[in-house]
Image (cartoon, rainbow, N blue to C red; front, side, top):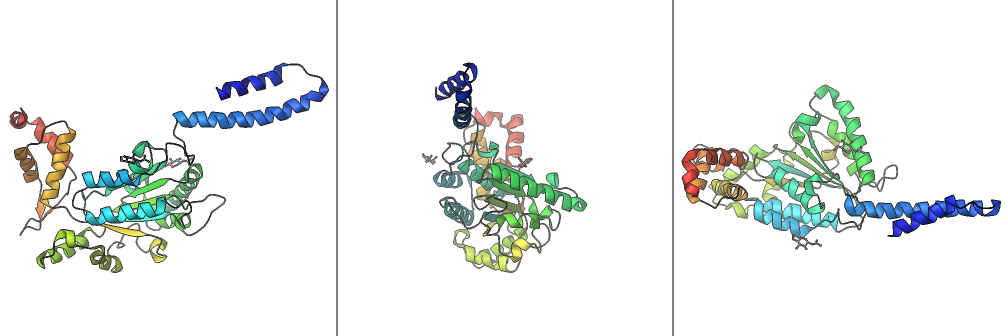
Amino acid sequence: MKVQTLLLWILGFCLVPRSNGSVSIGMTALGVTSAALYAGFDKLRCSFYECCSPNSKWVKPNITALNLALDAHLYGQHLVRDVVSRALKGHLIHDDPSKALVMSFHGWTGGGKNYVARFIADSIYKLGQRSQYMHLFVSTIHFPHEQLADIYKLHLQDWIRSNVSKCERSLFIFDEIDKMPLGMIDGIKPFIDYHESIDGVDFRKSIFIFLSNTGGPEITRSMLEMWRMGKKREEITLADMEQLIQLGAFNEKGGLHNSALIQHSLVDHYVPFLPLERKHVEFCIRDEIRRRGYAENKDFVKKVADEMTYFPPENKLFSTTGCKRVAQKVAYLLASETYDTLFD
Ligand SMILES: *[C@@H]1O[C@H](CO)[C@@H](O)[C@H](O)[C@H]1NC(C)=O
Ligand SMILES: *[C@@H]1O[C@H](CO)[C@@H](O)[C@H](O)[C@H]1NC(C)=O
C-alpha cells in the first residue's frame, strides 16, 4: 500500500512538466522519496525473503527451543547439553558481547557433534540449516590440498568478512577441523579476537563451532578408568574432562595444533562428547524407526543394535560408531523382507 503511494509521488514529479523553479524541489523530493521507497521495499522484501535486520522474524535465537531439541534427541551427553546451552544463552542475550563465541566439539564418532551443531542453527534461524547466514565448511571437501593453505586462508577470510558484513549473527561451522591444512585456522583469529570492529565490521556477534574427533580416544580412556572405579556416567563432570584439555589432548595434530587460537585462549568452550553405550544407540534406533513412520518394536530395535560393533572387547561398553550409520542400518533391515511381518 505504502509503496504504491510512494510510486505515485515519484511519477507525479517526473511526468508533470514544471517551470525552472520547481525542478530542483522536485529533484530533492525525488531523492527523499526514493530513499523511503527503498526502505519500504526492503521491509517488503524481508517479509518474503530471509534477511538479517534485528527485528525480522528470520534471525530469532530461541534457547528454549534448543534445550527442547537437545533433551529430545541427544542421548548420553549431559555435559554437552549443559555447556552448549549456557554458552549460547550467555552470548545471545548480550547485544554487545565482548567477542565472537567459539566452541570446539570433541569426541568419538557418532556422538552427536553434527547433530548439536544443526540444532544450534535451527534455534537461531527461522530457516535453520537452510539459512544463508549459516556456513558449513568441511575440511576434506573445501580445503583438501595441504599446499593450497595460503590461498584457502585468503578465501576464507574474504568469506567470513563479507558474510558477517551481511549479517552479524552469522554461524560458521568447521567440520573435520583436525584435517584442515596446518596454520590455516590462524586466518580466522582476527575475527574471533576481542576487537570492536575491523574495517567497520563487527564480528563479536558471530558464532564459530569447530568439530573434530581429536580427544576421542583420551575421553574414552578416561571414561573407562572412571567406570572401573565405579563412577556413573552421569556423575562425570566437566572438571573431570578439563584435565584432558590441559594435557592438550584436544589439540594434538591437525587444524588446531599449535594454533594461535589455542595460544591466545580464544576458544571459549571445549565440549567433550562421550562415547555412546548400547542403550543410547537403541534410543537413536527408536528415533529413526519413528521418523520413518513405523511403530516402535522391541525385537527390531534389538536386532539393529546387535548389528553394531562395540568395544573394548572384554566388556563391549561403547559403540564403535555411536549413532552414526543407524539410519542406514535401519533402512537396510527394514528393506529385507524378514522384518516386514514385525510391523504388520
Ligand atoms: C521458542 O521455542 C519454544 C519451543 O519451540 C516456543 O514454545 C516459543 O514460543 C518460542 N519462543 C519464541 C519467542 O519464539
Ligand atoms: C559466504 O560464505 C560462503 C561459504 O559458505 C561463500 O561461498 C560465499 O561466497 C560468501 N558470501 C560472500 C558474500 O562472500
